Length: 108
Image 1 (cartoon, one colour):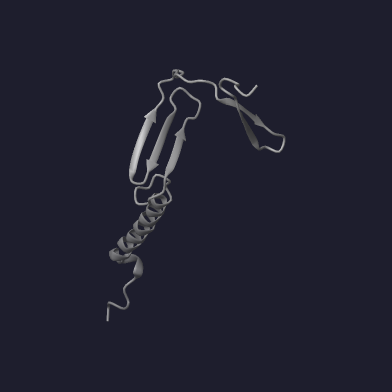
Image 2 (cartoon, helix red, strand yellow; image 1 turned 90 degrees about the vertical axis):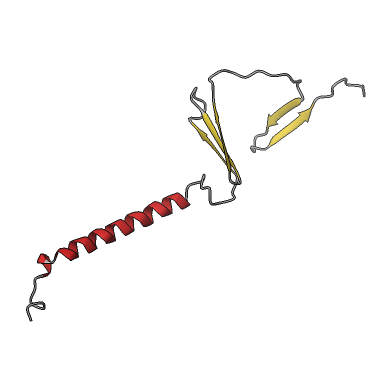
């Protein structure tokens, strides 16, 4: 039986089987990377990602359920209307205390 005496190095099917194993490992690694991505569309988590924080090309990506919104910074400082509502103090232990301001100070 010549088949049993055949050398394994000469069999071309063995090299293709090894390639298939390598590709299966690669595909498994890619699927794990996709599953661990915080912006994965298959999860219902709410995620906010800030790219390039504090720089002119900053982006904010918000995932709310299955909806993804992307906001790009124009590099300009925003303005708006509003009034001072109070003062926040950071204490020595790291806690924050907010002290509201009276609008008309009518109690005095």
